Amino acid sequence: MKFGMFGGARTVANADDGYHEGYNAYINAVVEAEQLGYFSNFLVEHHFSGMGQVSASLSLLSFLAARTSDIRLGTAVVVLPWHNPVLVAEQAATLDLLSGGRFDFGVGKGYRHNEFEGFAIPIEEAMERFEEAMTVIGKAWTTEGRFSHHGKRWRFENIMVEPAPLQKPHPPLWLAAGRPESLQYAAREGYNLFLDQFQTFEVILERLAIFKQALQSAGRAYDPLGVAVARGLFIARTDEEREAAIAARMKSQEVMNAFATTAGQKLQSSMLSDRDLRKAAVEGVLLGTPDEIIERLKWLEAQGVAYVLLSSPAPDGLRIFAEEVMPAFA
Image (cartoon, rainbow, N blue to C red; front, side, top):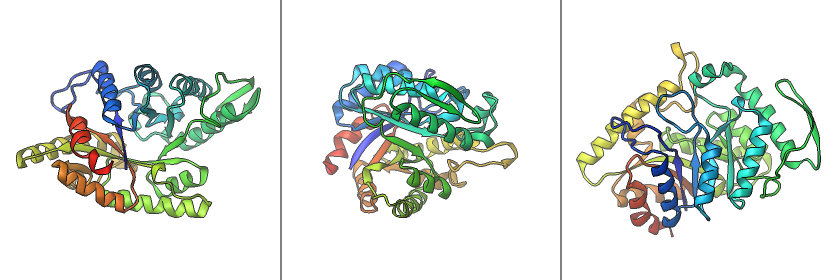
């Protein structure tokens, strides 16, 4: 089993939700994670939340590339409907080059309705814009010489994207997906898969089963390291610590569910957790003593999960995990 980090820095401290990291603290945490043996670090992209979340993920990853040497660096995800695809292709290829081929290109169509509203882009156009952007990026990274693109949203005439990525034919592609049609699309189009941190383990395994079946239909073999399951991590050695962790998770989950739902409940993202927030917290995170977490991970491993991305609000959570849990999976 391999373990990575998932999440990002916060530019503001908010004692209420447990996040106290600025950019420097986050960078230092990634440097330490590499030393502790973590395989990867995936960084989110968000806008307009008022929570100090990372907005320029490729820029921050470029800085991390200079501070690290082995850990893989990825996006989870670049939300393509908001970006010029040629500029993304250039920036991502530059990051791949600077990192020595350590970049994983995670992409998605987005799910937060307030972000689409902020960019004045209808969320109903998300999939169409995503697919065209990926067509352009694919051309940019695989075409010898110059190319043109005449699409509905983008037109490029006789252009060449430089530099080329170091990894050939391009960095590994990862897609965040939850709905059955999205899981089938990921399998059919050759993506690795992100399974989000908000669903219960039961739902995650249901989605994994759909993806495996779709891989078989597409003639692709299942690679356990081609599916990354994101999970919140809460080390709790006492009942009091356990209840405090559950309460904190329920509070943050309520905020995330609001981001994933439009006014009037007209549209709901697959990122929406179980409506029973306590169930979502207890059955959707790695919670408990290191021994309890090892037991849960062994169970996941038996279900075919071999790659887990961890998000921990506690500054020492990832260190304790590396020292007391990871040796069981060496």
